[in-house]
Length: 143
Length: 67
Image 1 (cartoon, rainbow over the protein chains, first blue to last red):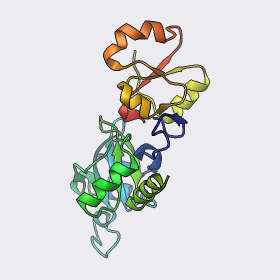
Image 2: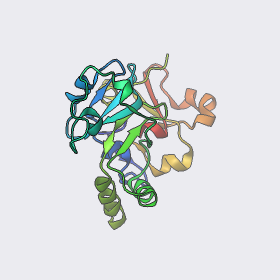
Image 3: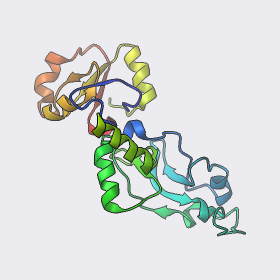
């Protein structure tokens, strides 16, 4: 909610996931098909499956599951329901988490291709690359 | 009646005169809050809202999730 608005306070300059995240992420619904989702892939190699006007994240579909990338899934039926290829229950993080905290979490948990940011109620906020998190954290530490 | 809004709505409503209300505890408020927000800790909402808020204007209430 606060992305793009000015902050103040002792840690106001600390980058947070809300401001680091790319808010323009590809989404589809459970009613969509593999072909629908494939057509929405952008710079991210995944499509988020969301529900309702609040865009609550139900899961995600990787490009590979859509028959793209790594030569996998070729010939996958275009009409196949997205629910059949969806990966449920992705790890998500809250918008207020600072870059420093997230960077430490990533270091502890191992490599991931992206960090998914949602509200407490599960509404999608955006995606952010780990490299961007680490860079922001390094910048925060360096002052 | 509360309504959930996104960052575009916030900017539009603030420009139109809505007041921002931060309901986080004092320590978190001091660390970071939206510029111009009014601090009304959630635990003291009933007690402090009447004196700190303009009840005639729309209020955009936020906490951790909204930062």
